[in-house]
Amino acid sequence: MMKFEEFFQDIVISLYENIRDLEGKMAFADPEEKDYIAGRLFSYGEVLEIIKDSARRFGMDRQELEL
Image (tube, rainbow, N blue to C red):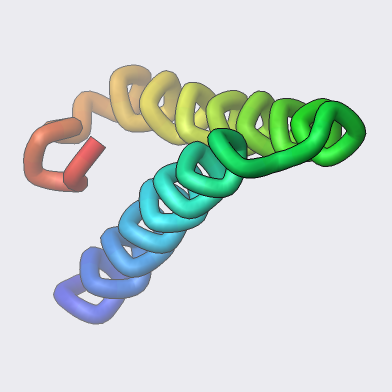
């Protein structure tokens, strides 16, 4: 089971890193790029919400999963 937890946490950490990276790029983006970045940020947010909802439904500890 440990391998799955490490795998899952790696995915969550990568999602959060990508979100932070995109938020940083947003400050320097031109209007066209901002639309693209905003779309990607929305998508990452949706994925995180799906993961959080699934964790809740399965009775998993969100804090332990770094959510």
